[in-house]
Length: 101
Image (cartoon, rainbow, N blue to C red; front, side, top):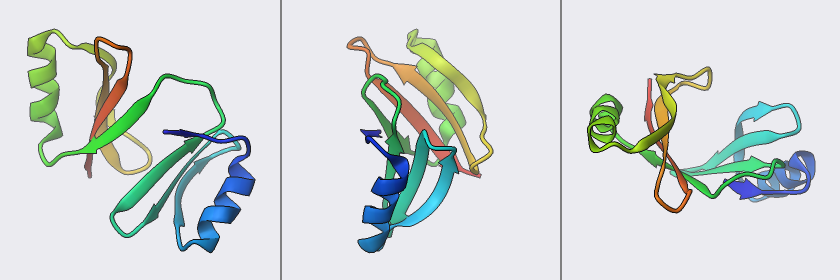
C-alpha cells in the first residue's frame, strides 16, 4: 500500500506511465496495474501492508488459523473480484493473501 496525498493527482501521473485503473473507492483508495504489477494507493494513514497472490487462498487461511496468526479480516469474496484474508504479523505489518475469483 502506497500512501499518497491525492488519489486524483497520483492516478493522473501513473496513467501517463501506462498504468490502468482497476478499482477506486472515492478519493481514498485506488488499485492500478500495468502488466503483472499492481499498486494499491491510499490517502489514509495505516499500517504497512502488502498483498500476496496465491492459488489456494482457502488453504493459506486454514494454515494461518492453525498457527494462531492474528487474522484482522476474515476470508471472503470481495467486490473487486478477489477472495482474500488479511493477517497481522508480530511487527504489526498486514499481509493480505488473495486469489482472483
